[in-house]
Image (cartoon, rainbow, N blue to C red; front, side, top):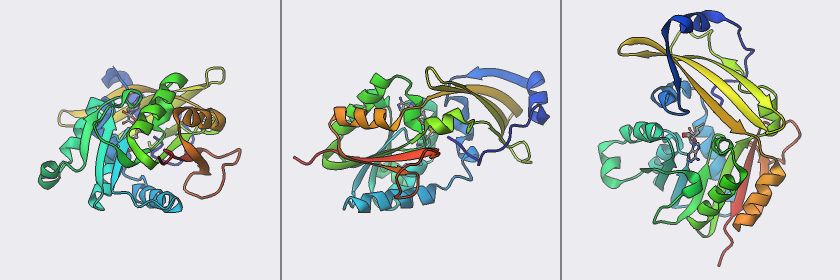
Length: 278
Ligand SMILES: C[S@@+](CC[C@H](N)C(=O)[O-])C[C@H]1O[C@@H](n2cnc3c(N)ncnc32)[C@H](O)[C@@H]1O
């Protein structure tokens, strides 16, 4: 989750001053932020991401009919794919994010159950369906802090793919997390929501902790709140090993939004892996 290009952190600023008088405390990650997530992501190039996903599918000769969108958030990718005619299930472990996704369903989408949303943890994924492809986008796997749980998410994903199905996910790299890519604000903006994020990096655990302060316009006026998000940086080797041990094969890794291999300054990697055909 990096809504804007990196900007230098503005010390102090209007928002920090306001926070001292109007703070409403710290919230669980992806709880309070759910209500403003789509506004925060207004500048995100979801359409370009979806085109890139199609490029990756084509590169594997896949034209999927069914897609599992793991850590779907408010469903921004799920809705785009469903509107293209694919059948999509979105899964997220934040009830608040799923509630927002469901609130965006039109009457006909609700009747058809497409996209369908489920509140589940990726590491314990358990749906009674298999899919042609599974996605997990926007560094959502970095939020799984324990490597064994991440491997469990990979295993559960494999079981939800049909033989020959394709799994695509992206991660923030250790390079990005250790170089302050989360140090951002939009204090130069006149419109809400406003935010200031400050990150700290622990090289030993490879954990990046981000204090996210938000100022949002609500029915009762301007409210401020904080969520603390933690992401873990995984190496390409760890991720590849985890995929292999889960049973995936034919693993490719790309510098995000290209078909080129990663370089040492890649901030985001895309992985493509296959559940072996029977
Ligand atoms: C940065 S958001 C990305 C949301 C969506 N994929 C998008 O592109 O807008 C990360 C999402 O991962 C979800 N998430 C984090 N850990 C998860 C887990 N263990 N299982 C399922 N979802 C998880 C969060 O609730 C959040 O909605």
